[in-house]
Image (cartoon, rainbow, N blue to C red; front, side, top):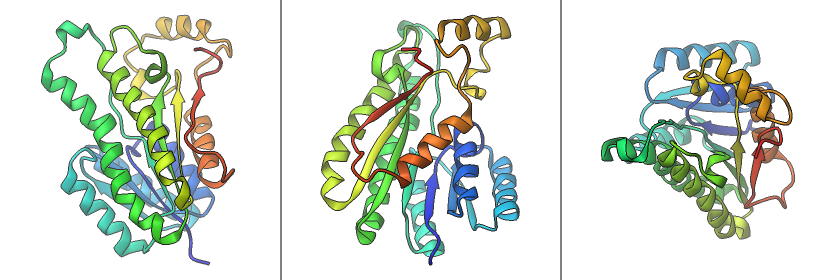
Length: 244
């Protein structure tokens, strides 16, 4: 049988890298993307190929840029000839007051977190239509569900991702393509490196589970949404230890 193929954006570290390891361990071929950490991404691709024997295509580019996205998905078709899953994980955050946020910063967050989901999904859908099946999983945030003070742009971008998820799921369900989102809470990744250890401990006390989530736990849920429950679509699933 031809191995299945997934594209995972923002895969050089954190949830994206953990998802890459999960898919590779299950025998999937991969295209992994990042915007800046090309050397790290290539090292990950070589390691996954060596450990699991899968084909792993690293791609360095901006998933919020139409031409970069078109090039990436063209390479996927040339190399693998199919696309079974898309994990839209690329994302950035910025904290601060709305009044201190520049238009450039706002646009950067929206392009990276939201426009990338639109562009990548638009490229992925025709390949999945040819297969008559497929799964898109958008990595979102609980702040997209309830909003966060001093993270207005990030919250807005993830709220848009959640709405896009629900709308696109309805659009694609008749074609056998499922679209869901994982709304992450506090996950132990580099995105939380801005907090001190004391601040992290205080935050963990607010979470009923008593700790931050692990990237591997997010990866397990992402993979499950790609391979199980063909009737589950249009959902924004919170992975937050009961926090929100």
